[in-house]
Image (cartoon, rainbow, N blue to C red):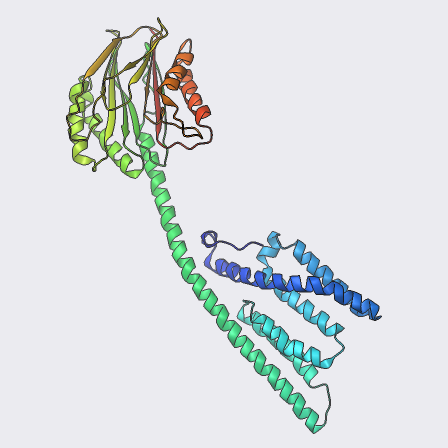
Length: 446
């Protein structure tokens, strides 16, 4: 039986938690008694056999068997739930064995009147259980105290011994009960404090879970159904609430805007800023065809609402089927990887710029390239190249470009996405993500 940590006891009802705490104490005391009798029982059994006291030997042998059974059962669930009752039963059995095997009245009197009450000092029992054990022990002590004789001197001495045992049993009851109450009160104070902390943590986890659900609801539930474009995406937050964002905004039948963003850090603060950005993007949906103007307006909004040092990288790409071109405006976001089907080359698309919300001139500019059937565009957050393995080495842009190049030929957007994510997962192994990870794949099909 292992002691139950306070952090685990708060999961139990308060009454059961108190009992388990007191039972942990009872088990520690019982463990020492079992160890003592486990050493002494074989010696007493052999001594009884050598002295020809076969009944005593049988009693000690039975006692040894009980001790061994308790030692073997100490890790069982039944033992754990009933350690107090088992302790009481064991004390009764040991008292009976010692009384049966003891030939001396004085020893039996001392055992019942003083030794047993002294041992009960160390147990933490219920008041009724403690009173019953002490009453039984006192009754046995009085019985042996009154045995020696019936003359007045002997009777007076016997009465004195009986009163002595009674006084000690009363003291034992009062002290043990007081110690039990003090231990119960001290534990309850700690338990209520930890229970309140656990409830607060549960409330926070529930709020984070709700925030996670809200954030996930901000991401597209499906991809636009376009005959000329195959789309696939994935976003994996590093914590309950991530700081990555992506969206598809159809401008018309021939044009699609893809938005990918990343708030510095992750957690609740990033999620709140992300919600504000999403709201701003929805207000600017009609202006996304002019991505430079839209990002300048978002820059002012982020600078006004985001706390200090919480910057946002954002990228808007306009895919134009009619013109067969892709135009990218990026504010501090990693460049788009453009796989060209004709040459098999992977190129970076997107000019360096300052993130949104810094209060500095973002120096935004457009970068545009032709598109052809079979071309693949890979949008991603910096959590992808910055994923590390057990040695602290980053996945890097070269491995990312290689993963795109290997999977782009003859694969759907979903297969390319899966290949990139599998590459990252194999590289990092069991290392947890330090940052949110987002991948959006767009493949030109016609």
